[in-house]
Image 1 (cartoon, rainbow, N blue to C red):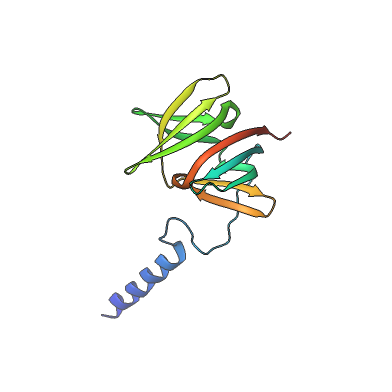
Image 2: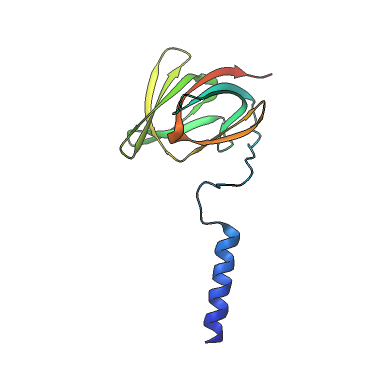
Amino acid sequence: MKKGIVFSILFFVFILLTGMAGFDEGGIVEAPEPEINFTAKLVDQSGMSVELSEISFDGKTCIKGKLGYSELSVSFEKINNISYILNDDQLTATLKLLDGEKIEMTVDKNMAFYGVSSYGDIRIASKDINKIVMQGKVE
């Protein structure tokens, strides 16, 4: 009986320490510092826009998703803008590349996008983004 109680308490403490939630609501937002500093204008689904630097998807300077059955990563260096459409439970990102080509891929709707604005760090789930307009790399 004592072993069961001890195990239950330890398991409960483990869950509290590791955090079972996806997006940390109420916590401090800290944008990871990417290897390359790209800037962009982000427009969310409400129409609010913000200029950002040090942008990344989970700390990476590329967007990844599925192109049919394949997985694809496209570097920010090749992208002009990204538009999002949420249909039912599937998020489609349309990438307009600098060479004029367009790519449509399915992306994780909960993938976190990060950036640094003039008033603080920002984190937003992909499903809440309307458009990202790339402005370039900061040397």
